[in-house]
Image 1 (tube, rainbow, N blue to C red):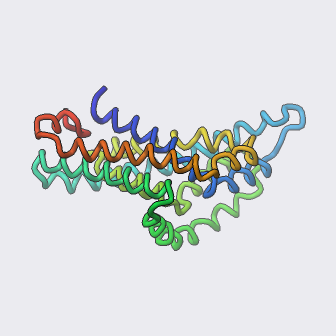
Image 2 (image 1 turned 90 degrees about the vertical axis):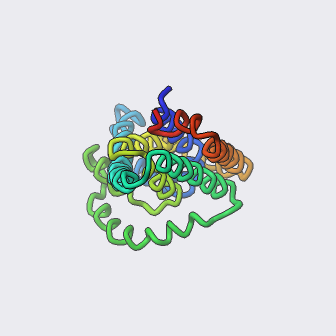
Length: 241
């Protein structure tokens, strides 16, 4: 597996493990939007499937757009840095992001929450556009709400966005953030049908702490690899060949 593809897989796993945090941030939104969606009395709950898909596709599209922009910016900055140095910086950014997120998910350090407060100002300007789309009576509206939902202040998403700075290009940044978003999708997708039971399960401290420790270990390994000899590093980092 190529290094950049490994980074995408890592982003998916981080999103999946970190989605225990999504229950608290987005659980209420998913439940409200799903229950408020137009329901076909014949098809029953399955009629809401298209709405759930549309919400999440819109949300992930926003993540990908953010990743593309930051990946492009990061690439321009790294172009001015010698290749080996750029690779090392990228590795440290990736590992640092995962360590910080792991500590955040475990409840041992809440520094990332400061990013959520900073994003609150942007969200207050964007959120009213979502209200204009209510009630949700068409999957197209659900998709548009998903686009807006992607800007919801979330330290986990902001940390992933910082990771995309080291992706090496706008395209790679978009894929990395899309992979992260896809990782969060199973939890939010299932949540639409089993919100109460699933929410209670993943809110247990042990569940969140376990997920946080796994992300923390992945980040620690990434940082450890950054300290390996240059020849090994060339094959280990995203874009190293």
